[in-house]
Length: 339
Image (cartoon, rainbow, N blue to C red; front, top):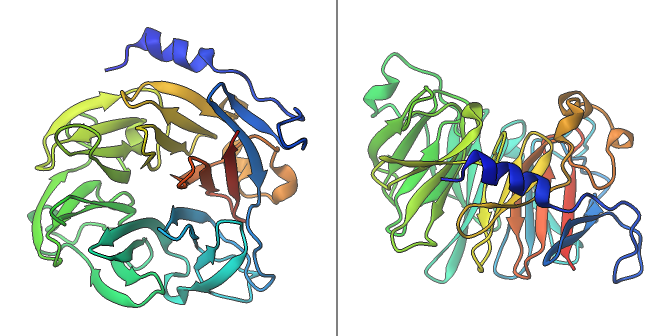
């Protein structure tokens, strides 16, 4: 586990944000990070059609063809109710779908099964996990975990994200409900429940994000224990392994092929961890401002270039660039191009 001293050193050791710095392309876009982890930022990335207006942008992923998927809740001023917006790798709009997720669009996971890719979506409003094709055709849904004794008495259930084990078992984080992890097999049959509200090892408070970590010899689960201001790791059977330092309000994770982890942190920054889960950089850090919760309800004129407001989802693309989506009322999609 990272010590307090090493954590403070890591936080203070990164280079500060450089606004208006001339980069290799000759532009003056914000530049974040340092050394091999230097990124040019493009805010409001993607050619969004005028009939679509983002609500809170909650999830982002990339498929094998390079297309970028954005899951959002839909703004009240939007003519379209489509919650899934798809762009090519250059930001050109491809298509949209997903009216049924309006107001509840949240977690987004992509997985290749055999030769076919599928999306797994969490709907916090309807309390559903939905597996779809890349075109939005429903394959199956998982609803209220009535089979679990932990939910006796009709406890609140609102799934936020999920992870899938090598054998296909599905781990659903009930982040906005009762803070349990509910486990199903690949066919959607209920298996078990672990976690539950609390701050002790093995307990959770808003398990907002969850991912399968297969970087080591044995696959484990990494959970964004957001309400407890920490990351927690577990065995696949649900036993606590460790706490990880370096984040404040972790929301989600994605891994790059070289072992780095990107962690969107709702407290106004994006954190990069190395393969040993040590902090590399806090990108676009505006956490000291203490006003990010207010800013998230305002329009784009309140957003500072090169600073994040409320990062909610993030993913690496195939080239090591990072896409960040934020929990702001008018949506915000940023591309961090590695330079």
